[in-house]
Length: 464
Image (cartoon, rainbow, N blue to C red; front, side, top):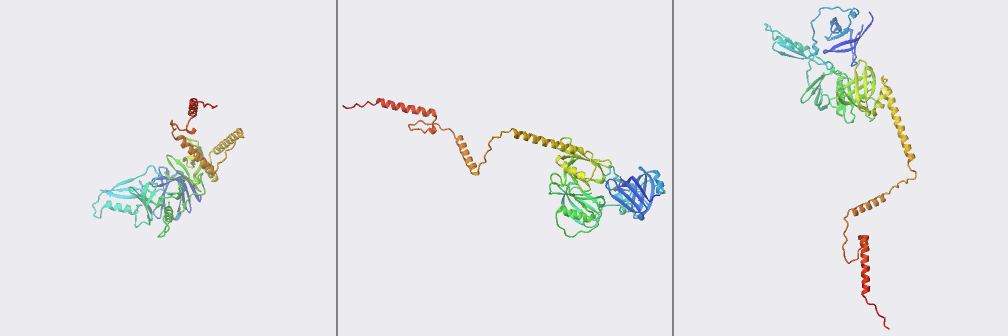
């Protein structure tokens, strides 16, 4: 038998959901890597106390029990692998219920109800199961209550023990939407709202992200696995997003991922786009992509098969960015502004990701170059056909502008005033208020009167 055995397409059962991954067995212990999240789980050989080989729905499975009582299940083996592992099969149980998956235990009349933690990745989950406990004639106590207390002592029930380490009042959240009081306990996170309460165990979070919003006024804080280690100062001050990040980092003892050197066309570290029916922001990181906020999507570079730049379905002013993973999944981020194409293409090319259609960039660059040449040609023709002796308009000085403005205003007022009706009087009219016809008629009348006056005057006789 080889020193190391490696198996692909092995499924690990976690709260009813089968995670796909790769299993490696060696003399030192066991290593399992989740294909979806990239999480690596190591179990030392000295920590294992028991192992069993069994027939399961997905072929054959391996069940391991540690000295601390934790059970690990790996399914998807072939029958021929059994000879390599050399495990013997003992008594076959009808079924088993890991008490670490139990979230609550309640009692009724002659029955006990077990409620289970839900796995968000599973489409179908076991919600609860009920056991009938027959009554007994012994006076030793209630068997139903004794059974429930025995389960609760070993179950993973989320309970608040003691005061919260830190409380953030009325914090605005996007998912779940609304204002919540965030109470941080040693083992879980409690979101207390007016309508709903949420309890998030630290073991269900994978990563922490601090992402700047495109408007430069808000910050996204995304938590995707964490464990409680570290201490906090009694008094801390700073921005709200900074305080939340520092507290979560101290509690979970993990680094917080922030965007790298990418800058889009507008200078922001993210790209506005749409995923499915929701609009959000896509952040190119140093080791992957993350989309927020509905739903949050994190894709690592090591699980990317290829990327594709596709034309928008409704307009040529936008394009779609498609990511195909090695597991066969495809993520399409649509309605990205065309101006972001060059920045995103250069980023993907620098990260050495496989680009499916490199010809799209060359086609767009060619069309842009053709449009530029057509514009320069049209401008040259226009300048050639324009008359060369057209005098240029002289710029008016500040004083001339004011004078011209006053004259225009005065002229406008004069033209807007009503025309004056001439009044017939014996006084001589000014030519400024008399039309040419009236002026000529008055002159003729005045001349006629003078002639009559001269005719009526007798001629003077010269005395001899």
